[in-house]
Image (cartoon, rainbow, N blue to C red; front, side):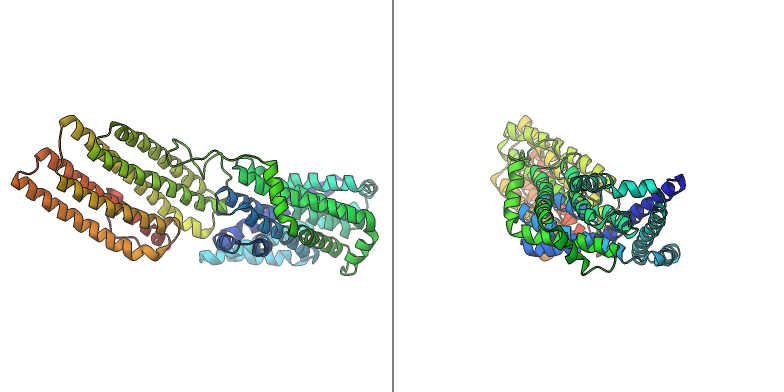
Length: 553
């Protein structure tokens, strides 16, 4: 075989892979957040999950990307294994759409498709239209690569050694192994099946053997999800194994059927196929649909099998666990489509930690409990660690291809990290006041204690409403947050006046008065930070931010 044919084949494959990557990334960028919302909403049962998996994978043109996203969802606790099973089953059908598109041989239109996409990207100023044009560019590059590969394969027919080598592939087991290895290396069953389709179209591969290569491709497609799950939690590993067992068990069933009735299967597929290329594409689709029909009733068993393979439970990472990230970090599955969701969940955990620490500090201010005071300082170190770790992660994901909607929210997330950290700082200030009160023997009147308790209750409720709005995108508490923030401001003024009156009457020492004044001022600033957190969701959507100076507090 001449070097020029090999180079042409390599160039075509490179263009095909790059085109698929550009198209898939561009689709995720344009519609990733919407598709993710669909995954969250419509996966309450296995059947709807399967339908969503078909549509999702058909759109992004990658079952590997879909399955990796499902693994990430399971890892973040957004989806359970039974819901994941339905989506994974559907993804296996949706992935066949690529081979169907390839079989229609649109290569002749590739230059026109590519040129139109490039012109829009270069000369259009509207960002949304340019993003859609990038999908067209990827589509054009993909078919340009197919055209290049097809041309080089046509030349291979004149090389006796190639014809003899490919023609010698008669052993079903070896054919399955070839499909498995190629797909594991390329990380895409769609690409491998497309290559098989082109080889069959040039009569370089016998049609019966393509069925076994496709079965190997199905198992090889599990590699991406399995690799993605290695650093994840146990449920993430189990989700990847659901995909693996589905394809292995489905392959075993089809092996038995092909062993018994290969000729009948060939005739059935050929009745709906116009040529060799259509035969491979239709075989790919029919194999996947058959596997789902056979294994869907046993999906619960497959889930249990994956749980049996990965036994035990993950070590719990609670609110008080020091210097550990639960949802993000090096030991957690990274997926651009779910990265922002995982950050929000980590921020929710950080906010709970800060709120709990504020209450611990306020309790220590009254009781002067030494252990509580020291724990406030320890927890504050943990909050500072989370602040730096989450900020670093936000910087990291800002350099990746995120869905457009998620990209818009990054600025708000940076602010939220800062606001939560500032709440933690105020808890530390309260602990400092507790130490000062203990060391100098300062006492508070019952009236002052009651007033601080009332204000703290208001602030706690405001933090709770704020985190509901932010973490769950729930705007139902918007009016309560606005009203509470105003009430806290009024309360702070009211308590400062009461404090001055007590000083005037000689009911309070100047030292106690200073501590009291600092505490109520600090609680008012905490309320400002909580309000900023609540309205971060609106700031991300371009609806403005609350009028507050707490970013500078």
